[in-house]
Image 1 (cartoon, rainbow, N blue to C red):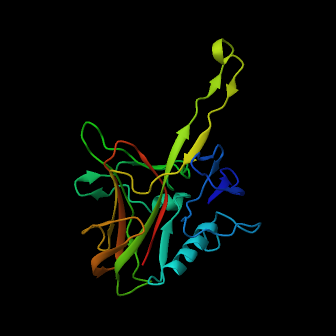
Image 2 (cartoon, rainbow, N blue to C red):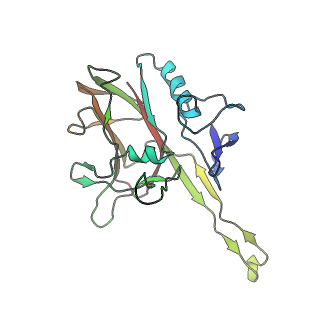
Length: 245
């Protein structure tokens, strides 16, 4: 389920299914919605603000009903400067520093977050440093004072394709005036070389987690972080993530 949303107005313009051929997104973006938790999109539906009634919040509420062993869901749709501010761009994962491309959060320069464009960079072919993106601390003490020892993590990766921008007045392409078309393509959430980790002690201890797989964190803790690590040869585009607990 792809909810095409206008980049300028934030208004929903179309609901479609990208299929294997992808979905064209020039001037639009697609909020990250769990496939197992589609929502009804009618005239009252909206993407932003993310305030509990938006499509992403409703999708995670639907997702909770399918996993009754969990009582809470937290997520980051990577849509706004506040979402970028919830990432810790100074963090390290072991000896590896953050290597990612994100929009600017609030600060002295204009904000620049663009949905569907957050990237965990590919492994550096010279230094072999992986791409790394780590969330800021997510304190769940106000929700579960005693802490949590299990999470189920969801994330959305996007494939992306671009056509060539062609304007020509000669040769085989004479008369062509074709703009660059950008499309989002289906993407396996667990491609080779892409790994996700969870911590409930503020990043002191990390546990490998599979996509939509319950992960035992061993001890109770309240300071949750997620880490996305890319040792593959391609950048990976992250459109959103969340976890149930």
